[in-house]
Length: 270
Image (cartoon, rainbow, N blue to C red; front, side, top):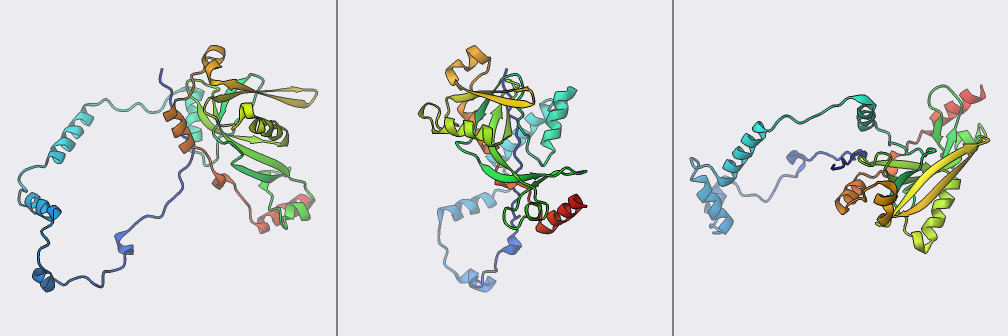
């Protein structure tokens, strides 16, 4: 069964191009001067002229395009939508502006790193309040630090492929704290497990919580052992390329203005 590669990354907006934005050519010829110019006799010009004189004869490209349109009309309509919670999660994530976070659980799952190091590291405040509670620390003159006295926590972000469903691996963001980041840094500095995103290297991840203490278990898994030990098919080169293309970047970080954070600090103090 072929795997479906789920796209997660939101494309950056680009400025639309308009011919009106181009400056006018001040060195162009007027109509009278153009007639006096000698013909250059280019091969492209000759071809264009011959094509224009045969308007009643459809081009090979036009016939091919018409044939393709006819074939598309014969195809059954594409299957869209679906039922169940799986479909709910997919459509929810596809329409969300926020990245899908990876959450470790008590059951070990396979993940693959798309980065050889964190793609984003920042400090985050967590303020107990109604509504939004996490805020990016400004680091310099941050009202939540200076006015409220809140100490931010470190957030270390990695792009990974999550194989919780081996038939539907997905790009997710693993927001690691210092404890997990130290473990991953050790793997990144070890010759046997470096770099983290090496093609033939995967990891199993799980966590256990006991007496309010959580321990994470991260174990390297070689590609050759995936199918026998984990019933997971390794990613092909094309799959890896597509997942890389859909990985997240620094633009996912949301930063409030200093005035907004001042308001949050005043509300918390009141």
